[in-house]
Image (cartoon, rainbow, N blue to C red):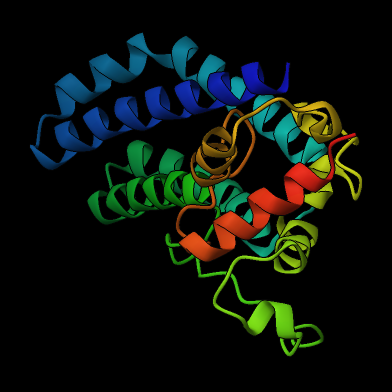
Length: 216
């Protein structure tokens, strides 16, 4: 269900941005008659898309394992951009229309990357454990994997891998191969965040070792 809501949310947001981009183009191209015609034809569509964005977005926020900074900023920007976009079209204000469109695109980008900078920062072990010998070594280790897992994965998978929150699989009974585990961690799946931009090869190997240690 959560995966379906995510796909619906992304699709609806993309359609909304596309439609608004067309309106901005007509406004910038000085075609007020065409813009008015399009706005009149899409009033119901705008209302439906707006409602779906709010409903699906609220649900995804509700089931999120943690309310991170990027999510708060996203919500604030969405709330702020709605009246800006409406006023821009009613007043035929080009600067406001462009500003609203840029906000929409930025909000979509931070939602996809889950980062205000639109780029994931490399994972760094907490200071309290960074001096652990097994983490300082060049070889992958279960201890390092545990540190990374606890920081990035435990919210949905649970400390023992059995939580299964937001569609997460029970890792204690997982049959994934070594390659499949690493691919899953790197690329994510469904609501699972991809960590390819945060974890290096050694860290990925360490996570794999720890995930396999959770099996019965």
